[in-house]
Image (cartoon, rainbow, N blue to C red; front, side, top):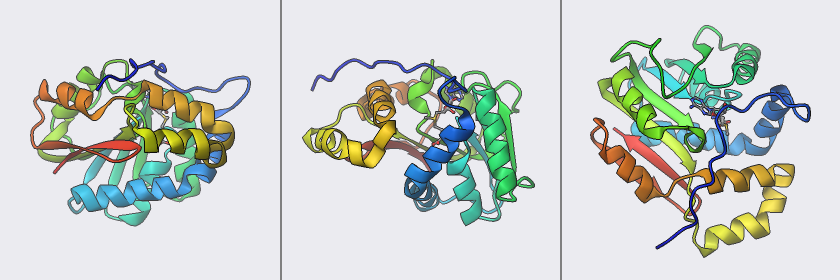
Length: 225
Ligand SMILES: C[S@@+](CC[C@H](N)C(=O)[O-])C[C@H]1O[C@@H](n2cnc3c(N)ncnc32)[C@H](O)[C@@H]1O
């Protein structure tokens, strides 16, 4: 089937005159609280992080996805990398408020170039709704393959662009209720996201093995066990 071509959204999400990332963080945590919890539950259920895993989160944004994971699994340590210094500032504040600063470290950087991070460093790489922003996903997956231990795990969640009729009804009919003022951002992230097939083709060019792409009505996830 043919779907509309991607409409890239651009990389880092930063403070603007209309919205600081502190405000963005608050809105996201109000609107998506259940989604953040579901993401953390899925990481645990789908890829079962090993005890005391060192986790890397790419595109950690305000931090809520990783923070929920750390609250559910007190043995995990997390490094969060984001292309926006404003997001790094907000995530560190949120982690401090949640009293998690001894288990988390946020820093500025790009998934495409993680050269400050050593090879074979992480037991688990996670990412939520960031992949559709990456300028060059091929490079990010090469970097993931480098920093992830050979038996490391991966859980990446994002929207899918190839919505069927059910997905389109959800966005267009229920979207105004579900997303409110964030609806235009939701729609533009869907337009910027990939189809499961496109992601499979990107991953097939990479050194990573044992990955699967799982897709449901609205979303896709890449999992490596
Ligand atoms: C839609 S936000 C999602 C944030 C967070 N994961 C969440 O679920 O709330 C996407 C995030 O990815 C970051 N980002 C975009 N391109 C990136 C890249 N190439 N490397 C790292 N982070 C990136 C943005 O700055 C932004 O914080």
